[in-house]
Each structure stands twice: as structure tokens, then as C-alpha cells.
Image 1 (cartoon, helix red, strand yellow):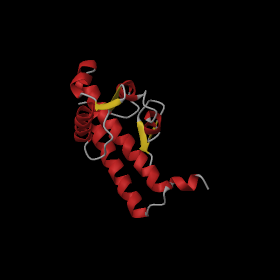
Image 2 (cartoon, rainbow, N blue to C red):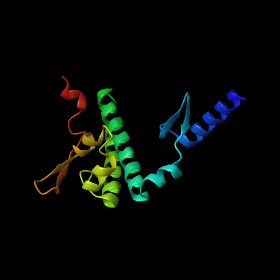
Image 3 (cartoon, rainbow, N blue to C red):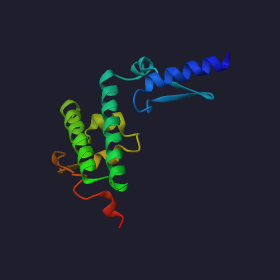
Length: 145
């Protein structure tokens, strides 16, 4: 019976995980199960949850972009990731404001990548956007040579 339950939980996890199998998980003793979004909505407003989901997409895209540069992907592949990041950033900031905003900080600052995302924005002394950093202008691998 235990094996059937575990197999059912795994299928449920795979279904919830979608394409990347990187969904939010919680540990249930020795088993993993998908986090129930309904439970999360009880803990925070829906807008905060949507902010977090948007920041996770940005974080994952930045990580893919950095990895593509470090692993010597072609310039074309790096440009594709840069374009994806630009689109995600524009969509996110149109809905939720700058990554460095107070509301976004409250929602995501406990994630270890939050400050990496903040570094994408160059702000003036008033907190207004001066420019968005171009992460593909200098390949990350060039920083380590």
C-alpha cells in the first residue's frame, strides 16, 4: 500500500511540476509532495503570490543566462536568453514596479537571488531607474579570466 501511495504522490508531483520539475515542494517526512497553492493563498495576498511567481521566473532566467555565458554557449544562444530576460523584466515591472521597490523586497528578499535581481537595475539617489544592466554586454566568463 505504501508503494502505491508514494507512486501516486510522485505522479501528482510530476503533474504539478510542469515542464521543468522545479515546482515549489515541501518535505513530508521522507516523501515529497507538491505545495498546495490554495494553502499558500491563505498565508498571503494573491498579488504577493503573483509577485513571487514573477520574481522566480526572473531569477530562473538570470540563472540560465549566467550559465549560458559560463558554459560557452554561442553568442546567439546568449542573445536569446537576454531577450527572454528583457521580456520578463518588462512584463514584471509593468505589473509590479521596479525589482528594488519596497513591495517586491517584502515579497522576495528572503530568496538568496533577490539581490542579484536588484543588481539588474541601476537606480539614482531617489530610487528611480537610471538604466537596466545589460548582462550580455560583457560575458560573465570574461569576468573570471
